[in-house]
Image (tube, rainbow, N blue to C red):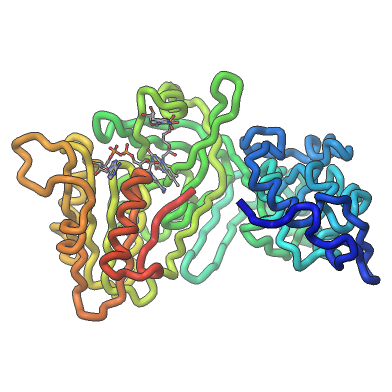
Length: 439
Ligand code: FAD
Ligand code: NAD
């Protein structure tokens, strides 16, 4: 709880209540100070009216919420229900209403650039704006629907090859469309979903399957190493969204073809929980059915690998999924790398994803080692046993050189990851040396 006297702060004559000139501020009512607002946001009250659910907001939907008692505003791609905030706004209700039901980014940037609305209005967040796919065409002649996109991730180059429908010479290329020649930072773009088709589903362990989805024609989606996407299905009339980390179709495919042209397929290793909400539905899909796939998100950057010498991966269960691409990336692109070690925690031998592939990789590449740790093994298991522990970690995390540059990636069930991070700090690894994966 915040220990602030409610009615007297700020004082009725304070600068926080009345502007001293310049930008107009309106006197706020008693009990409507910034501190009162913070107290309200921490009270647990449902300020959006959506009971904590986040939705994707279309422009049409946004426009409908344009009244004082039902006022939604979009700021940098995020939509907030600002009705509860009206009386607390130092600029007054009328000023907020200027942006009602619309994009208020410019208005907020002009007047309150220094205010961190993302944080102030966190509890009012309704969701993100849905992005409309481009419909108008700017080219002067028709091109084939199927075009290729080549992304060279490490130099940031994107090459798009369009094929003319007719082999005539074009007098001009066409006319530029809105947003031509502009770059939109990824944080400012909303989540955009494309409908993908289920192409195949193949058992990997008794409960984990490799799902292959095909992107719609001409769509390009390259998910950066260590990042995830959201899959969306409508389950009994409600849209349900869960995060998943794509993998390559098999562990070493990227060794054969480092830059994949025209990625048409996206692969997921997904564990089906019989009593889960999402995965049984996904498992019941027929080949040819569709699943919506979002653009990528995530806090992992391959720049964390720069000059890296030792990479340690701690994965539990499907927490292995981000490690699959990380392994590929590190072993192919990081010349300074001396050692990559994966400690893979599972309940039983039958739960280990891609065991033989990992063992083959360890055999083929001397820099790579894998250790399996089982929490519920049979009596025949000769390997390591138990849960993540100081003893297991201190033995495993040996640097190849005294001061070698090290990165430890950890992913699995939340208690596993939390406990792991705590133990790593106890072993004196710094924050910069640890990466955990979150949605
Ligand atoms: P849920 O309905 O969430 O249930 C899962 C299990 O938990 C069930 O056994 C259920 O009975 C139990 N459970 C549910 N609620 C409770 C409760 N309150 N108390 C106790 N038990 C409960 N998964 C993958 O398989 N592959 C991936 O690549 C992958 N990537 C991910 C990436 C990120 C960034 C994150 C955050 C998660 C990822 N996951 C991945 C997990 C995935 O998002 C889902 O959480 C998972 O598929 C379970 O979804 P579900 O709706 O089927 O199950
Ligand atoms: P699981 O239940 O099969 O457990 C695998 C291992 O995790 C166990 O053998 C044990 O060693 C460890 N473990 C489990 N519970 C633990 C606890 N309470 N304390 C310490 N260790 C524990 O795992 P699963 O069903 O495959 O679940 C995988 C988890 O990974 C899910 O929660 C999923 O959401 C998460 N995940 C996260 C990401 C991400 O990017 N954030 C990606 C994939 C999966």
